[in-house]
Amino acid sequence: MKLDWNALVAEMVATGEFHPAGLDAKDLRRAHRRRQAAIRRKGRRIIAYAAIEDRTFDPLYPLYEIRRVYVAGGNGNGTAQKLIAKLIKRFTPKEEELPRKNPTFFLISKNPVLWHIASKLGFRAVTKFTMPNVREWAKRAGLGKRLPRSATARNPHHSKRRKRWLFMR
Image 1: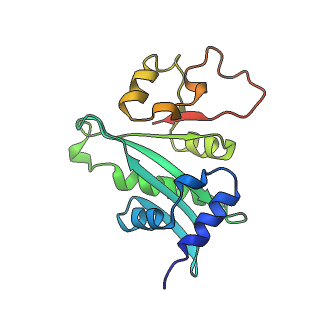
Image 2 (image 1 turned 30 degrees about the vertical axis):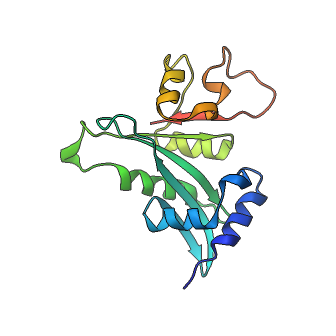
């Protein structure tokens, strides 16, 4: 059965949480085929999607970003949490390779539901107070301008608008 990747892209863009220029049906499908994404489906329709991107800059310290977490309306019930947990398990080495190759996972989001899911999975919010070298780390991880202001602000918790946050585990 052929999955409808174009419909997934349209649904993701319609939420307003994903930038249309960064979404391409071929890229989403390719990530899934390479096992860099996890999905849930109903028939041909993809109802949930989460991807992981390798951001490793030092081979001794693997670094992965959880990206493009999407669950279609009415299909919650822990679906996003299960997809993220599946990706973390897939990219965590076997016991005999730990702790030397213990990977770090991170995600950036402005969605409070995703913040809650991340905290349940052991992620913690990162600020310059919890990680003083966060700017240097972000530069090495290739985040560039994607590093959220909340990670470097003097007073990150006081704002009237919803902000993006960096979470790490």
